[in-house]
Image (cartoon, rainbow, N blue to C red; front, side):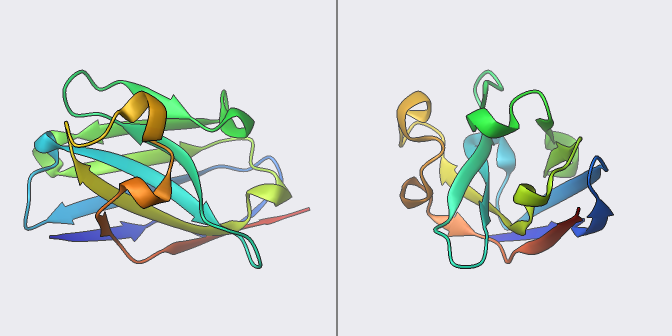
Length: 128
């Protein structure tokens, strides 16, 4: 089971990026996929997640209306579109996976500890 996150970069405040999380060794169809971020000196926090069964989505309050999670099962890829970026969004962004049905997504979907598999991070830097 491997996850590969990519798409980070340096953008000005108000800019946009699209992150990708490609899975290999398993099919995303059967997993909950979450996006998380970790800023220097801070704990990892959940940003968004998407379920397998009905593609329900969940977001951290501070990114609602600015970030959009989506998936393409045919490409075994989950995306996170980041719009209207702010300097406080600067962080390393990670994707994680857990088998659908193993957690209550509504309660724990944005908790890093709920996830079993992780990819390496991709750095997003937003300049002011």
